Image (cartoon, rainbow, N blue to C red; front, side, top):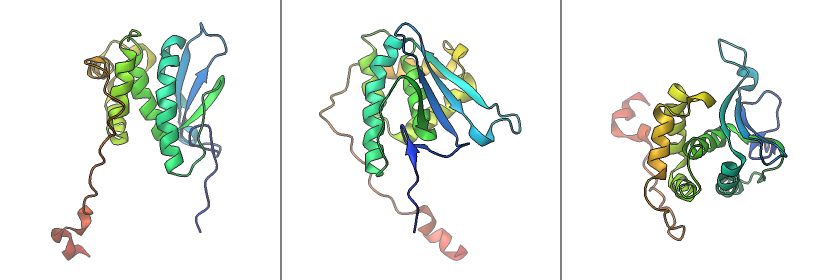
Length: 192
């Protein structure tokens, strides 16, 4: 029998040393919000730091993007039968994959104005999780630290998600059809 994993906040494993993201939300509204990748046990090994700040956001920008991120994450956590979370002052732990997705949203919105943020949130919500993970991987490889704001993939994310109009929330995303497992194709039958 599979033991149900204990989680806290937004799907983060309740185990010491897990690879998670931390969102530090200060009590003062004029202080910035920090998103930090905490490598857990992997930190301090083979050149990996213990943790890395990924983005520093103005509290005003965080207030706009936090709601869409909470709704999106909770919808997926609920579907996976994992306790849902809410943002609170202090440290908020976020599952490793959800943290990557949150970084993509934060990077796209960090230099946006208040008119662009709803468009960015809408376009981010229209992306599939795998697309967000890929965008994170591409961005973090070149410009994944707070000082890298005006460069490379960080700028590209802003332009890609801020252009255009807010998409209608009425229209639901169409799910891709389930594809046949690749290893069941005729060319792999000889190997089995």
